[in-house]
Image (cartoon, rainbow, N blue to C red; front, side, top):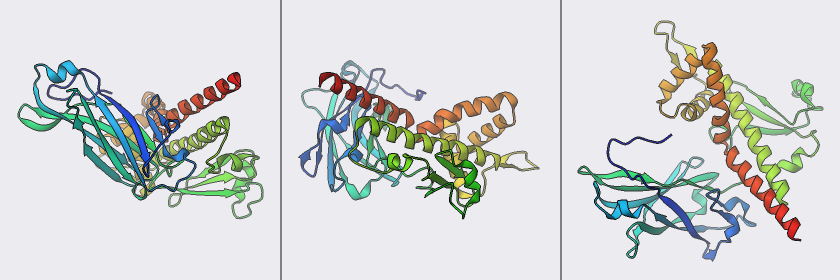
Length: 333
């Protein structure tokens, strides 16, 4: 959905390009930089023992809009990296190219110990508009940076994930009726737990973290983990929504008191209803749940929200590209 600003903004496209990446002073192979998916994959490196990365970028905008008669003054570009897993944000101002007035270049330096999971690299063009400084007049499509294989999932850093043999686990007899499935999510109000079935042949070998994998295996590994995480988000949202209580006097709902339920609701409601505040989104979701017609629309929106939270579409596209490369290599062999 396109954001509407109450002032003039750029109509042309802003493009963010990663020109090169340095890891501890050494040039990173372009195999780890995918301009099609707009992704830098540090998680695929053969060694995770790096200390500093420098990402060099170039940003270009619509030259005629930026150099001709315009309603803004002194346009500038800020590059920002956000990481939800570490609650970190870092921003730098880029330098305008002296030879191209609609191009900016610069770099951002990352200390390895400050970043985990996945980050989002964003670009904002801002200027003085109608007498006010730093008004955003344009932005480029985001890039993503993978620091690890997958970010902790799904809430508050992680939930408990346990490998057990469903057929022989005496401490949890309820798992025995699910020996044929690869995983089971226990929606405990205090401690939700994702059980992975060690007795499901091949599952543990597939999901274990390994840096060196054949391309088809890596594609299956990523998509399987993302599908499990997406299912967990979906189930936890449904359970959390059922736990929402309505005030008998005002008739208005309130978020559940259990921490994980509130976090799940606020996280996915922001994706389901991106234009609403957290509370207004909750009111809309509860109203939809209680409506025969609205409940269908709500859960239709929930599927892409849950998959988007774990980056399932991006991982699927990346997996398809890996399979295509593997096919081409076989043909050329």
